[in-house]
Structures are given as structure tokens and as C-alpha cells.
Amino acid sequence: MNLPESELENLQSIEDVETLEELLSRPTPEVVEMMGRVEGDLLVLGACGKIGPTLVRMARRATDEAGVSRRVIAVDKLVPPKMRKRFESQGVELICADLLERKDLDALPEVPNVIHMAAMKFGSTGREETTWAMNTHLPGLVCERFWRSRIVAYSTGNVYQMVPVESGGSKEDDPIKPIGDYAMSCLGRERMITYFCRTLDIPVVLVRLNYANELRYGVLTDVALKVLTGEPIELSMGYFNAIWQGDATAMTLRALEHATSPPLVVNVAGPETLSVRQVAEEFGRLFDKPVEFTGTEAPDALLSNGEFGYKLLGRPRVTPPQMIRWIADWQKRGCTTYRKPTRFEVRDGQF
Image (tube, rainbow, N blue to C red; front, side, top):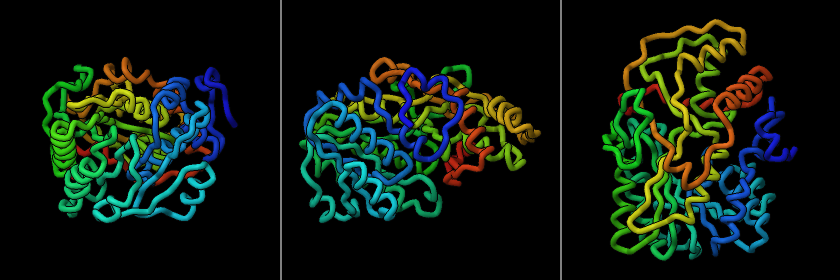
């Protein structure tokens, strides 16, 4: 199924995984135009995570629609056979490499465009040394290796401090106050990239993401599953942002055109401040199930303001109400999920 863009907002149900992945990776006209203007091959580091497959497929599709010749190269350490076949069928090249091994990093092809997604979050508690190696040491190695390239690097809204719910979220120049090893190591990533950006004059964009959602994964899916299974929902982190993963991906690709030295920092986040309580109650209505809560909403939360990103990279196409309807329908039909909680409710930074 390949719906025209104008019909996306009226779509009530996403039939299956094939349809979902087509929608997630569908490039906007602006992405197609940008991929026609930006010259050279694209290397995506850490391409086998939750967002990477969407991004490399969108880049491939946009390149083909733009009618230009470009290698889109996915790089990761562990590549399941099913994902390998998927990349090959999509015209995406695949390189298996341990990015922390200099010989593997040095062997990667020289390209003008790099998207750095390789990172560690879940399981960081108890493996702090690996978290810091992946999130802080590796970005320095990447900058040394690809100092001739433009780099778009994923960061996170977790580097910000908690802000009052009514504030509208942290802006790019607001104070930062990371909590816990994961968030601190992500700030370390930003600092290392900024150092090399300034000393080697590398054009860079730092993308602070908060939070990407699709039907199999994300904060909205976490809340839906808890309502569906009757699990009490913790309210202390009572508010959050949510952005459709396809929209976050489109914004990330468009960031390639805006890389600068010193780095450009941009939030990629949903436009609304969503209430956990209200979202859960809406899922309860759609599932016809009671909802149980624990705790009370704190007056602050980890929130990001995405307005600067919208002006630069485009507004999201998919709204939270659409995502909620799609997720509820997906869950009622028993469709697959990743079963990897985001742990968005954590306030102490321990992931």
C-alpha cells in the first residue's frame, strides 16, 4: 500500500508491518528535493537500531525519487539475517563493523555525508563503562575518521534539566543538567563532537531527539500496553513529547543541509505536551478497559520545544491523536511489538 500524502491524515488503521514500514520510510517532497541537492554517498553508523532501518530506507527512496546516483551504506556490528536481506532488497549496502575497533572504523569508505546513530541507552545501569565508550569515546573516533565529511549526530533531550510543565519545553539554548550516566554520557558525546567540529572545522548538526514513536515501540505504545494488560501507570513523570518516527527521520535527513561549524543544535520533538493520564484514559476508552494509576504528576518533566526544528526542518505530518488511534487498533488486532519499554517514567536517570 502506498497512500498519497493527502490521505495520510485520514488513515484509520495500518494493516501490517509491511504497510507500517512503508509509511515510516516514506520521504516527504522536501526530503526528496534535499537529497537531490546534497552531493555524495551517505553512511549511517548504527543502522540496525529502532530508527536506523527507517532512516536508511527513506534515504534510499528519496535518492531514487530524486533521480540521483548515491550509495546508501548501513553500518552496524550485529546484523540479523532478516535485516540483512531487507537492506539488500531495498538497495542499501551493508557493512558489518565494530565501530570501537579502529581497524573496522578506518576500513569504512570515505563519504561526504555521515549520520551517527550508534549509541547505548538501555542497560546502561551496571554497564556504565560501555555506555561512556559508546556515547562519548566513539563520537570522537568518528570525528577523527570522518573529519572531511558533514555529520548529523543523534543526541537526546535527556541532556536538558526537568522544566515546568507549562513552560512548553526546553529550547536549544536553555540550561542543560543531565541526570544519570546515560544522559551525562550523551552530553559527553556532544562535547566531544563539538571539540572536533571546532578544531577540525567539521560541519555538524546535533539532533536532540525526544521521543520517537511508531506502533511497535515508543512512549505511546508503552502506555497502551499497560492499559491493555491492566498494569498500573506511574504518574510522577506525568508529561512527555511524542513524534512519529517517520517525521523524526525526515527531519534528521533534512538536517544534512544545515551542518555548520560550530555545530547547529536542534530539537526534534513532538509539538504537544502530552499528559500521561489523559493518554492512558484515551487508550482505556478505545480498549474499553479501566485504567489504574499510581503516584501523582510532578510539576516538572523532561520536555523539549521543537519550534526551531519545525522552522528549519519541517513540521510533523502525523499528530498524537492519529498515533493513539493507530496504536490502539494495532494492539487490539494483536500485532507485533518490540516489547522494549522506553522507561520514559524514570526520573533518576537510571536506565
